[in-house]
Image (tube, rainbow over all chains, first blue to last red; front, side, top):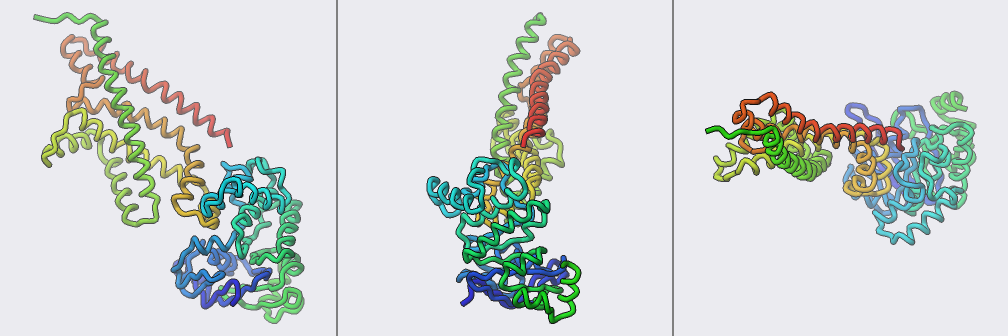
Length: 242
Length: 217
């Protein structure tokens, strides 16, 4: 069985039918890039995977934890699914280290000493071991986003969701964040990312999914389908963004 | 036979009564704060019934005069067979009044915390109470301190209304002294000065806090 299984997923915002039956299987170690126009439903799809958006119909199973027609243990699901946001969303009243330690100590009841070791380890992984005691507003955007990645990693997620994590960054800060993601991918982390970085999706991803009008319109190996798109919609999209 | 009041007699009596104003203010503020925190939690919980109940609670106390609230407590509870002294009625009425206003002030502060903070903490599997305790309230508190201290001024001035149900605080004692001395202008001038002496430092303090938290992170 796949690590993430999505079957017949539907989602409405009022009368707006945003996701119209998504079927998706993600294997361990997959690096998946979700692309599509704004409003296509790609961000909504990503957010349903850790329960930030409810599911109207369909099934989502992550590593044995199931959400069926919107019912299920969301907190159990979220312990397996980490998320990194476009706007970082670090907790401004806590230092980088405290940001990372919060969920392990509060949710998993990890001892403080042990949580500190975890925090040091994940901050080292994102190259910020010297920023343990810095507050978010003392860090650059790129550093803040790397702390946010570390914060998600500290919960030892099975899969990490990235929602346009470089879109709010100044251009010169994009690469330091992408380098961290690339390293995670190389270490075998399962990643699902909504991204506008086509080159990154092609170079690092092993699967590309093009969402169009709430459906998976085309998917496959990034290099193949970006070079030779089968549908005119994907061809138009790649022409517009690349 | 008239008792002669010197100005010092008036001042001494007012000072003694002022202690009751101070005690009532403190009590109403502390109990009102505790109840208000409870109301706040119910108001922003995900429980529809609790939301509706606390919304109604706040609307009622904000939409009726404090005097009517005191009348209802003072005259209403005896109808149910519960005897209330003016002191108890005043304390209870002001506590409820304060709790409703503080809950609403604090709700505004909680809502000032960006949605992304809720989402990030939810995505880390924190429960609602954990989100409140570790992420939302610490940030809301920063914003809440200045308006909360500011509102304490309203509580102090609100205690004056309890004079009407016969609680002998500053205003009630003032009326009695005015009747006995035939010097209403002097007496009420002193009463007003007493309130000002209590409220002005609070206003100043609130302003200072506001400035401080404005520049702080």
